[in-house]
Length: 218
Image (cartoon, rainbow, N blue to C red):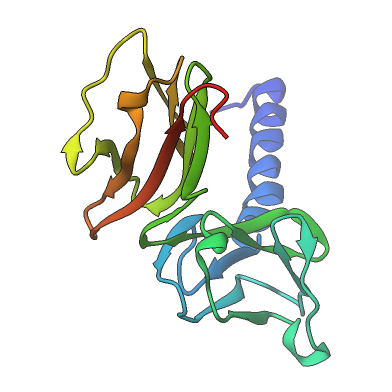
């Protein structure tokens, strides 16, 4: 059976493409961290230590590896860069929550893998515990809070759940604070306000003592 010359040429081009591209896909380098091939989140706790080991898979030559903490380059010893490289994160604190570590291929930074720290800790509260104001003025009690997982926040007054009056009280919550604003303070607002944070780990409270003085009181 005779073959049309144009058909033979088309088949030849098709086969040539397969031969050229297949080996390149088979030899492309892949990075792993602690055996994982995809970006992932690592759960940890304050005071602990974690080791991250980056390795090159499918490499055909020695490959230099680079580590980054967020956008900053991590200094590595000369013997800790080729084909396999590790970093040790010690004395982990609440401030390390969300921090990412990225391992990159030296010759091709687009080849990378990242690990984000998920630092789990109970609520931490802080704030100005004593405030003295005059009647008729406005005051804001700011309860700074850090927690992971996120905490449910409540305000209490003299050990009872605060009865919010729309025109008198306003609550504002951000990722870092739980605020109680009191408009036109009255003598009856005098007392101890308690900021309470409840998470799946535990419940924490912080007292704020509000002293209301009569107008022009010495």
